[in-house]
Image 1 (cartoon, rainbow, N blue to C red):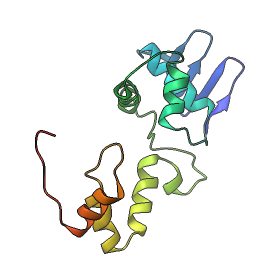
Image 2 (tube, helix red, strand yellow):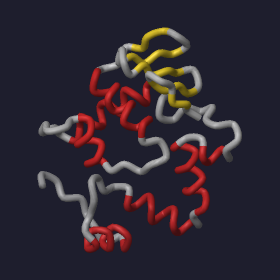
Image 3 (cartoon, rainbow, N blue to C red):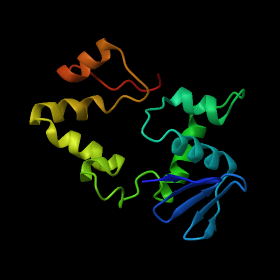
Amino acid sequence: MKKEKKTGFSFEEFEIDINRRLLLKEGEAVNLNPKAFDLLLTLVKNHGKLLSKDELLNTVWENQFVEENNLTVHITALNSLKLLTHSSGAKNLPSRQRTMRETIQWSYDLLDANEKVLLRRLAIFVGGFSIEAAEAVVSGQWSVVSGQ
C-alpha cells in the first residue's frame, strides 16, 4: 500500500516527491513526462476511488482542450513502468485485488461459457455502442461496413 508522506507518497519501490515533481524508483529518478506525472499523482491521491475518463482529463489538463488519446498515451507510459499493474500489490489482499489485470481476470473467470462469448463479441466496440448495434452483434446478424 502507499503511505502519504509530508512531501509525497511511497509505494513498493517507488516514491513520489511532490515538491520536486519527481518519481523515484529505488531512490533513482525516473524520466516521466510532466503530464504523466500529473496523471500518476492524481491516481495516487485518489487511490481506491473510481475516476471517470472525463474526471482525469479535467484534472490533469485543467482548462485545456485535449484529445482522449492524450490520456491513453500517458497511461501507456505509466504502464510501461509497471506503476498501474504492479504485481506485488498489498500482501494481505487476495490476488484478485492486487492489480487491475488480476481483477479483470478474476471477473472474467466468473462468467459462464455463453457470457464469455457475449463479452468477446461486444469487445469489438470502442467508446460505446447503441442497443441496436449490440443486439446485431450478439445475434450474429452484423456485417463489416468499410469507409464509414
